[in-house]
Length: 143
Image (cartoon, rainbow, N blue to C red):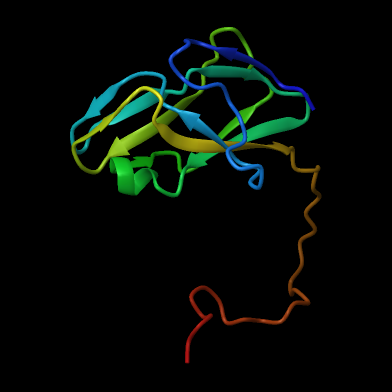
């Protein structure tokens, strides 16, 4: 499948699979960002994409993002659908700094994968469900 992509500058690496094993692709900060503890910022990722109809991208932090930069993604997972595909529809990562930090152009701060939309669902209301009752929230792992 081919995805049309626009880069907003030439300061970040072109998108590519890192090791050929993962189906997640790293995204990089497209500019230098300095954040003080408690500050919010939408960090530009330097790309826009034209996703095929029926697909969306899921954007999440890399496993090392918090350790390396002390930031958390404020929406926890970004979803970019195929309608966000114009010339000015740059992708961003909204973050909150939990410590003073600097992020440099080209730093890998998040990752994405492209998924098909969920199929249309129909909900059927029931008084009781047939599955085994596991005891509710927090019940697993108790001795």
